[in-house]
Length: 259
Length: 360
Image 1: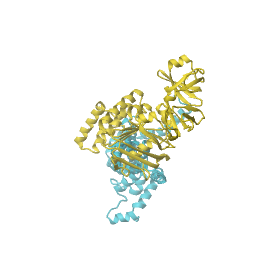
Image 2: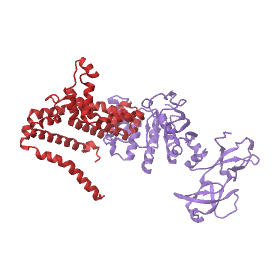
Image 3: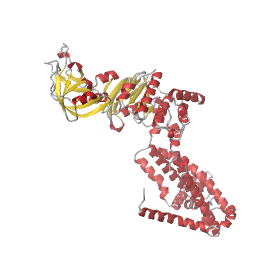
Image 4: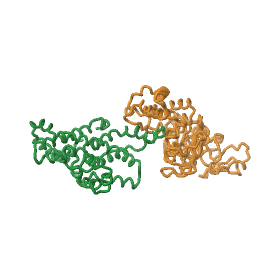
């Protein structure tokens, strides 16, 4: 169907607006120094830490988020709507606010922080804090994506399974999860991408200790001060990873064959 | 071999107040019929355990009460109109998951192989369920139900999404599968053909209430509601017996039908009655040709349906009825919609039986 001229103009403007800064970034990347920068521990170490923490955060967020989405999709009533609002708040919260909130929940002087420090555990400014911050921002993506898929899918499949002798848990793992697999994989990819890109909350609650809490986005922020080439290269690296994840989301395995 | 007992009272989901009670014996195949929204599906969902029944309701199999058990412990599979198979899985995997709920690994594999063989679906074992045609998906859904442990089987409008030929094929398959295993079958349908070819018994449900329960023969010969009569292709009219003239039946329109008194004592006969007769019992002619028939009236042809070599005339007038005449007769008499014709009905072709609400 032909589209009106106004929509084509709008589409062109939007794409230009989004792509120009990214192209400007790529044009400034010192391509000849890239191999050297990538093996620099400041960058490679941060990349390694980012990937490890983001994988762990995504796994934790999935373990918490999928049961939460299951509960949300099975319930009706005002409590469900209230929980839906609460779990979506981190989506719109400035990450630095999330960081401050986490710091006051788990840092020194907070109730939980004191309990933990008596037990010999300190979370603030450790790798655990990085995982915590990333999980905090990734979890809402996983919950809302899986919740939407389960709600759209309805309960008919689970009802059929129940009359065939499946316990509710067995029906969930053998019938429901395979049915919503595309949405589940999308949720994991979005959660991972969000965790990998986490910056504000991480900096607030975990700081920027090289090798321990300095993830790639935090490292870019630091590098901007003294090695602009390395900062640009690391930034381009994040861009490539983001494109890879989003590209993966469009593959038939994740869209369930629907494009 | 176990009978399925169902007794439901009180409001079910979607606000329908139910008052339904029946027992389905092992070799019985019960068709639930009724208008849309009458509560047929609610009855199946309550038997399967998908909705919570009201106090006083009672579901049992072989005398053992099931009312308090969750669906997955009831052993009563329900097949929905849309099969709802997990889309990414292979047919064999789906069946194997079901068999594993009550069999070990080796036994499950053997059980699935046996079911596939019985249902003739062996060739579909490696197909992903999303690639199946609607007929194949329905067959697989039925195979799923047979794979699960089951003491009874429920089908909710199983053939409604299928084309006529596929529906006929699967109906025949269900009939032979059920005949082989002697478990009660309950299904809902909107198609008289399903009732006449698959069911042994019929339950007529209207507005949540069981109006009539009986064998297919009984219900189609003596239907007790306008819905059941229309569904099974029979004419019925409510009438009152005139006790001073025992062979006179007074309709609510004031029209009088003559019946055969057969020398019975009119005072012991029920006074509120249904009068039923087949559409083919009506004669249709042009003008007022005097015959030996006593029941003759002027009727308007509202519209005409063609059923193969028969024409079904929907007649209005003092007695709104269906009249089936041959297409040849239709052409000979040059009847068209809007015409006035003379309808006749032999007194001997009437079935007269007590009207339910009076029970007299």
